[in-house]
Image 1 (cartoon, rainbow, N blue to C red):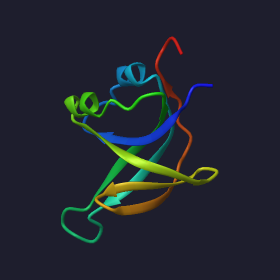
Image 2 (cartoon, rainbow, N blue to C red; image 1 turned 90 degrees about the vertical axis):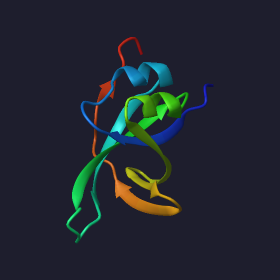
Image 3 (spheres, helix red, strand yellow; image 1 turned 90 degrees about the horizontal axis):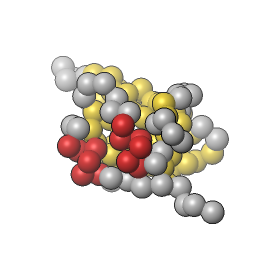
Length: 102
């Protein structure tokens, strides 16, 4: 049985779908997170929950996308480490982004 890992990604521009091929993965959910809530810098960021065989951090970074650690709590609820040692509890909504050939 092949081991799978989970992580979240966020970035600028269109989602780099080809990255899923490199990581042998698929997007299994999305989160909308409000960053810097209550400040002039407040914005909503979309995080993509990825299930994959690999996590190629440097490659994601080359597309100006960041990867984040995640832990499944139960069902569609996940803990996501967005900044430092802070874990946010988020509920994923369904998404269906996959690389062709999977």
